[in-house]
Length: 282
Length: 326
Image 1 (cartoon, each protein chain N blue to C red):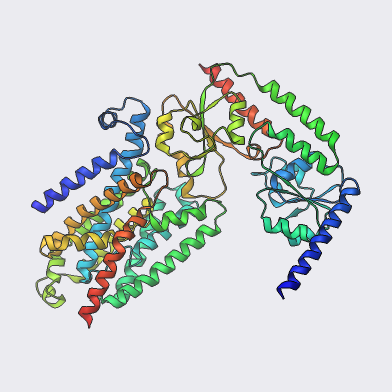
Image 2 (image 1 turned 120 degrees about the horizontal axis):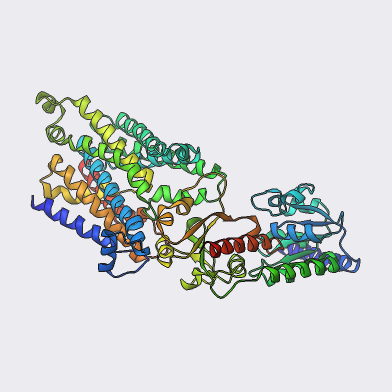
């Protein structure tokens, strides 16, 4: 029994190898399915007309997806092997956090899978764009996006030496340090991050008391989620308002902060505008 | 009298300790100065807006749970009656969750304690109806298990159905209780109901003393039993409902504290009432210091500590009850 299972697995594995090899030789993939919010956005930017056949459900959700309007015309999938396989893709785009069982199942079934790591800094975004360009056979389009992204990022980089201190403050008192995409957005917009002063370079829990004691000039509040929860109470704690000399922003870290795609420029621009308005107010 | 002053001194010391413990470390003297004088520094915000309401809530919640535990035990003449164990706290948590998840508490803040109070009221009435006037252990505990299980399941269901991705994680808070990052908004929200509950329960002393002689003897002494029962029901629901609405369901306080203090007050229910209120406040203050000092940054829930202390005692009490019944 076990031997036969192993043999059938070997056969499907061999088939997968042969098939993926065949696809790779046949030029750019014609039927591409994306099952991750961030690969959805990269693919929507770069794919040739008709090349992308489906995006993940989250891509349609305007509170998570920076390209929800564009994504509406593409059918949504539930990111599970069964539904994805029935779409007959010759390339599936996934993230490193996609369920490994789903990816293994697709590979066993002979579908090529390209996995994208989440970007932890702005510098990784051109790499992700280039990777998507190679995967879709759209290197020229990717290069154009990379050039535009880097030009705009350079244009936005005008912070002087007097960098205001800021904190990212999310639900359940979570914060992000400089080794995260959100932390890098903050840096690019000309802020210093107090999470680094608290020793949280990767992010972690920053107790409300600690946040107040650090007294950052700007407290960037995390996004508002639908419905209610007790875990979000920390974002409305009166201590934040009582802190003199600190500006508490509205719920900011929304869809343009989530994915390593050129839309992070919207976040950088928004934070830079905030910094400029603070400097003007001084 | 000596017990009263000892308990008061303990509460005062623990209150001070609670004000001085937390992740933001600052010298004790400077912290207390910042508490008394609002000088606009971050330390004074920490002391006045975060630590003070937290310590006050620990006193309010602890006293409420200790007092209602002692009152329920006096009325039912059963040491196992405790708001957490017999499902009153669980039902109150369900009420609070319903008020939050329907958005009612957003439009009308008082809906939070009122809804918790309403469900707690329902649970007390159900418990008294099921346990009967004598409060036999078996029926009391079985009814408590049933009500706790139902309230817990409904709380989880409501939170699982919430569109908010963090609501499911809230289940731990509502089941275990915590005072982390509460504010004066919560103090003012709960205070009127808790004060009402204290007033009602404090008036039960003489009636409960008379009841130790048995119902017939008590009634022949002029005790109006239905009125006593009504005061107990409303008082417990107000206390436990409001406390749970802001701090989640914290179990075992009403079991452990009266049990520890009973020998000191000569088993007189009237004396046990105020002693348990003070003892409960001390116990929750101590536990809230422990969760911050033992595992800082982990947001350990109060209910975990309470259960570690309370569950072995609960087992011990059940063992004793079994021997008495045999």
